[in-house]
Length: 361
Image (cartoon, rainbow, N blue to C red; front, side, top):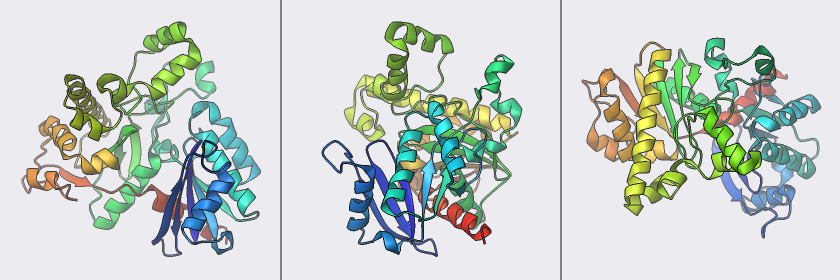
């Protein structure tokens, strides 16, 4: 059995796959240290108990790590050097990497010696050309690692795998990962060539609690007024749809029916369309548009508005299929294939870990 772990600061999501990558069981344990389990290791025990599994039944564990930086661009087995590399990236993803490290250590405490593997959300975008990743800032600052990385890479890697299995992977794919975190990606010949996200997950499209693109002088002004920590908290946790419409969840915005909520949805769709144009230009056209993530898979209204805004590339979609959240949305006359693809990051992580283990001999 392969245990896939997605650990945050106060929660852990567990998915177990068999050797054939069939989904066997799932469990989420939250409120760690705040009324729930005291530690992540205890949360692991609780989660495995809910799934009826003992640590001895596990073949290996595989983890999602948000940021691998410049050096960690491929799935690999956990070693002290890999741990040090993930720790070095904590300043780049302070809301994510610490929790990911906690998950790795919790598994080691629960099952000492169990092989552990890591996959990185930034790795899929390692194929972006330098001209796409470099910020036009002094060389000494670029040398410190200030550059665009891109995120949601495991989601995009899974999307490519699924399209390829369908026989639907074309040369130029515009992919949207729409959820609480939001991004878009230009995929050329199965590889990322441009992403809407940057040095951190704050850049890009309007998100649940992050603002997306922002003039850096605005960030400096916020830091002067609220301090660096206050500005960081505002940009990560109190901006985006929440700031515009009063809710970070798209379903709640639809239900609210207020002018502010309507404007938040308008803002979300406008910036998705605007970034799409940039990404289409980056790969010289588009043959396929794909939606994944909670909003991308299930919100026909948002999906339709984005597709309407891309009619200039020859999009023609079936409104009934869209309303039913069907897998194929394009009409026969459409110049662009349009798909929805269920998010499948956990299976992607398990598959990558299996591949690394097989290469170990």
